[in-house]
Amino acid sequence: MSNDPLRDWRIAEPPHYRAQADEVALFEAAYAARLPVMVKGSTGCGKSRFVEYMAWRLQRPLITVACNEDMTAADLVGRFLLEPSGTRWQDGPLALAARHGGICYLDEVVEARQDTTVVIHALTDHRRQLPLDKKGELIRAHPDFQLVISYNPGYQSLMKDLKPSTRQRFTAFDFDYPEADVEAEVLSTETGISSAQAHQLIAVAHAARRLKGHGLVEGMSTRLLVNAARLIQGGVSLHAACQMAMVRPLTDDADLRDALEHAVLAVI
Ligand SMILES: Nc1ncnc2c1ncn2[C@@H]1O[C@H](COP(=O)(O)OP(=O)(O)OP(=O)(O)O)[C@@H](O)[C@H]1O
Ligand SMILES: [Mg+2]
Image (tube, rainbow, N blue to C red):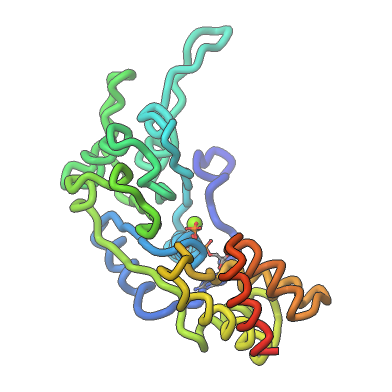
């Protein structure tokens, strides 16, 4: 497979993903129908892990692009490079995935400017084409190609939104933090902490999540709980781990920190 152009993006080991509901079967159905997928949800609730897991399950390479506002269409599609021997075309991540049949994952897609995002339009409707204007080539997407995007609708400004014409090309998942038993399983499998310890962290998280909208813009994510669990596994006390991995990263507000400290003390 040394001449496999997507070898760097193949996922060898199965990523650990604990399903919350029927999202795995639904993603498979979307992939079978070659429908583009959008995954929305708060930070650290499992969106990227889900996409990695699905790429592994479908045995497709996954090309991830972290979108930002300076990104241009050329960053997605490709550009000519100047070399001593002349110019050489280099496919961007989107062209690479479309040409050779990978899954292209545009993470935080709302960060990209709308005039950049429109390059996906012909790829995400019945045409499944990507025009490389500068090169004068039209890529007809490989049958295995799929586009996945994700973003966090929480702290998105009006300026940062997808055009309706972009949005309405996708099927969508709304992600949220898992319910307690599932989240405990995630923590135990990811880090090895006991179910009882996991439930203590989750009790703190539930208190914090109730503060969302009351001073907190985002809830306490599963990612923070995983970090705390890792510290505990490394010998840090529950109290210190909660402060260091969960409370302090979450907020600088003294009153909120107080409220969270109470929640921590209540579970110890
Ligand atoms: N369902 C799950 N199964 C396994 N691990 C999970 C799950 N949900 C969350 N995690 C854990 O939480 C961490 C954060 O998840 P992930 O990186 O997928 O978040 P995200 O939704 O992509 O966040 P962001 O919007 O900040 O990129 C993962 O590294 C993993 O440890
Ligand atoms: Mg992510």
